[in-house]
Length: 165
Image (tube, rainbow, N blue to C red; front, side, top):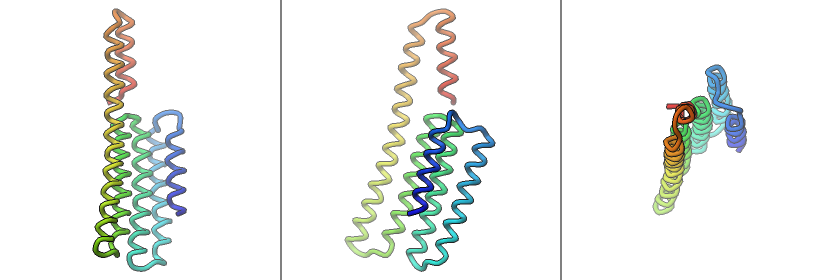
């Protein structure tokens, strides 16, 4: 779908930016996500029933994902990246869950189970981001502790600057 392509492009554009976004760039990224959402939502008006509901949820998911990526790029911290991964997993879950609505019986149960499993994978990815950041922080802390004097002070200052709270 066209919306997914734009979301992937937007995420790539943010991920490949040199450093964390400035406040102005972050604001622009959020405005772009909102503008794209409005365009995609307008396209949903021609649909009816569950197809329309899915279209609207998909448009919201793309907006939420783009905003989560922008926030993660703005903050530039592992915690922000983990939050973005969780937000994106939740957005995908809402779309998948809406797709299950018209189904009945076992088919609906299977559909919901797949949606829940997909959300759990996204949450696991967020947890992995947090765990990797903690491990890197611990390794860096150990490396700094092995140093002494002014070199140690520079190492600690660099570590704190790179780990942004």
